[in-house]
Image (cartoon, rainbow, N blue to C red; front, top):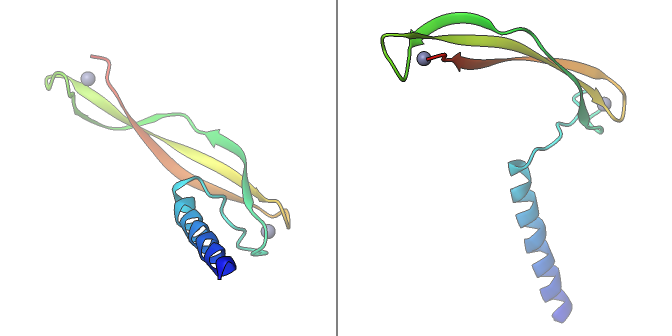
Length: 97
Ligand SMILES: [Zn+2]
Ligand SMILES: [Zn+2]
């Protein structure tokens, strides 16, 4: 009887643990071998480029630049060694006022 109760308590802890896990940074699983984890290798940031202008937050008479840059992240699987590159875009608003 006692053992069963302990087992249930353990199961609850396990469930809470799995639920809380996605909140933290989880390493993506390898799509190739389905067994390894993809670890970030190297991140390359391309230079910021102005894409358009918007009215300044502080003074609408001025314009702020909206800039974008391309981020290239390479990943390598710790099991099969396959590597993958993911490209994403970051943006920022440049205000000099
Ligand atoms: Zn792999
Ligand atoms: Zn501004």
